[in-house]
Image 1 (cartoon, rainbow, N blue to C red):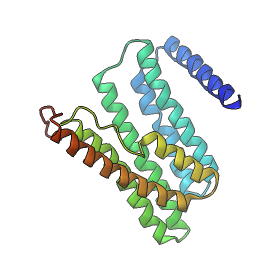
Image 2 (cartoon, helix red, strand yellow):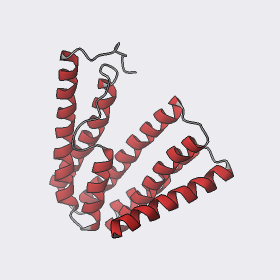
Image 3 (cartoon, helix red, strand yellow):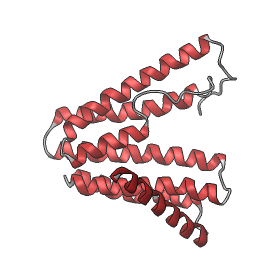
Image 4 (cartoon, rainbow, N blue to C red):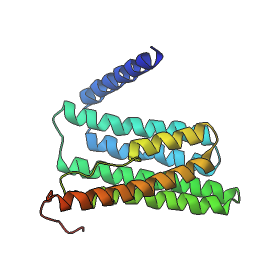
Length: 202
């Protein structure tokens, strides 16, 4: 019952904000770029050790990320460039968040967790790159335990429950496991004859 009320509230808020943004004629691409500003604030607060505040800014950034797609659909402006910009912005946001975590562990003199966080950052980027590269070759590669949404939820739980070190271990492990899953999926898909003309990465 409570979860249903929360879901309805979130959907209602999303619909209301979308209508306002459409009325104001704000471009979806502007919203996409704007999502980086709360991410920067999250990075700063992470570096300062204000974990809950950082988590709230990450949620705010995610809300912008959801709204831009809703606005694009509402005004019929879904475009290939918008999709690319959204993906690039997501990668930048991910990197900024992990940089904030690295700075936090560096400031608190926890070198092991600095290394683990860098491994989580690399794994996060590899999850995205593996899918992008694989989908130049196979039809679909949206598989694995730790897609971006799941990684964000795990990070927020780690922040709100003050278990950031454990969270980085989990994120690093799941990110690299997901990368491996996508490589295996691609190999099996190609072996089954599911392929398209490859495109060289730029």
